[in-house]
Structure formats: structure tokens, C-alpha cells
Image (tube, rainbow, N blue to C red; front, side, top):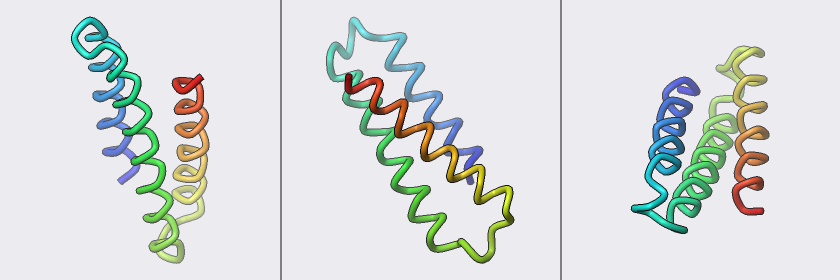
Amino acid sequence: MLKWVTYLLVIIIVACMLTPHILGPLGNGIIVGSLLTASLGLLVYLAVRWKSLSVSQRWGISLSIIVWLVLMYSFIR
């Protein structure tokens, strides 16, 4: 799950960063929205599947959420 969400985020972020002349300021909004949506989605997934996930999967998802929220904050600032 985490792998596919990460791939999708990378595609969205790279596409928005490579086409700033087309998207303009909307590009940052798309990046921020996708990072926030992915973080909230993984947080819900983590809460629902907590007992069935291994410890390393829990740590991986938790750290990814934190990193994506920090990255989102850097795009807002």
C-alpha cells in the first residue's frame, strides 16, 4: 500500500514541478492537496489495520505521514 501511494505522489509532484508554466500557482495547490490527502488516507489506513500490520510497516507508514506533512508545510511556506 505504502509503495503505491509513494509512487503516485512522486508522479504528481514531479509532473507539477515540470509544468509550472502551464499550472502556475495551481501547481503548488495540487502538490499540497495530494500530500495532505495521502497523509490522511494513510492515517486512516493505519488506524483501521493497526493490529494486522507488522511493526516495520507501522513505523514506515508513520514516518511517511510525518515526512509528507513536513514536505507539505514547506510548499505552503
